[in-house]
Image (cartoon, rainbow, N blue to C red):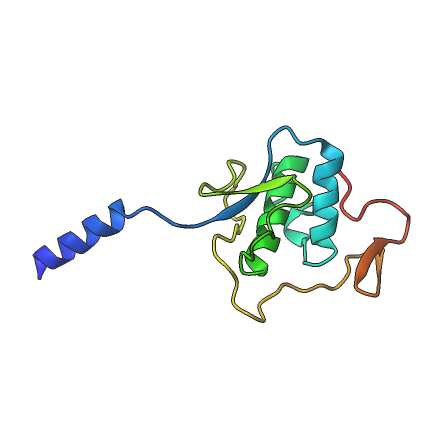
Amino acid sequence: MRMFLALFLLLALTTSSNATYCLCKDGTEDNALQASIDYVCGKLDCNPILDKGACYQPNTIKSHCDWAVNSYFQNVAQAPGSCDFSGTATTSQNPSPYLVTGCVYPSSASSPGSLPSTTPPPGTKQTNGTVTPTNGASVYQH
């Protein structure tokens, strides 16, 4: 029995992960990253990347974009083509280097029916499924 347990632990430690993440490409212009964030946050709950959210730090547009596009990618069950965002994102086997303790960064497809709340954030309105700010600014401006 001990031999089996030791073999199991060794196998668990040496097996590589086949997790797939969606991350924004390095070197992409901020306005393109912002457009990706706005698209995702018009469909999903992006409270984790808002001020005081678990994934707010580091407060960079790249970090927030990584979290947003990956959340979308996982919520659509990693559907083919769902990690492109007009060429601003790509899949990776490694999670974002910007992860911080307490930030939930999905690494696998969500089960059906587990989409986050799509209730519009404060200061926005929702019309025909589109979330727009009431002041004319971007929904998640940096």
